[in-house]
Amino acid sequence: MELICCVRASPGGFPLTRQRVDYIRGLRYATLLARFFASAAEPVSVRRSRESDALDKNCGATVRAQRAHGLAVVATATALLVRVALTSWIGDRPLLILFVIPIILSADAGGLGPGLLSTLLVALATDYFVMPPVFSFLIDQPVDIVHWLTLILTGALISVLSGALRARASDARANPPPPSSYPTSRTCDSVSGLPSR
Image (cartoon, rainbow, N blue to C red; front, side):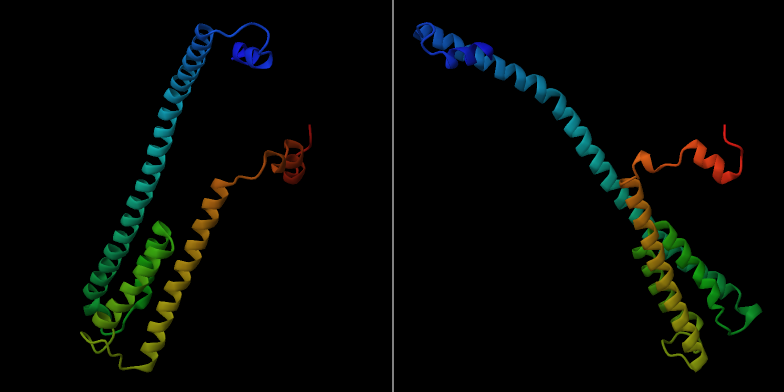
């Protein structure tokens, strides 16, 4: 590259013949080609690994989301089966607190989406299978309507809060605070009450 710069900087320095121009072009071509292969070989593999890492992360996120949605369905069905099994002991009372468990599990596993899915499934399942009259979407008692709506509101609130908590945790992992904001050992000692060294 210096030879090319020198030739361009002082065109009258030595006569340019066709042979010298071809030689300079050849050097330039060889240098560019060597740089291309030297730089392209590693970045392509690095780029591919980054792309595959991003793909793995996206696929991993997709798999985690699918598992969380599956958990919402399975946990809600399990809670419903437990509630139906308890019918002989508790009678026709809904026992809606039991259905908060699948909502919490789903929201904790997947955030907002699975939590809201579990809330929707719980609302439909309790209305159809648990609330009197059974096997109907009608609810007889006004107090049961209030309890059912409270369950839905609680499920939505749990889902929203869990989704916000997951988003904050994700932001904190993506953007950690600068090292200067970490407490030093002297600060930790003074806060903990230990004598400083």
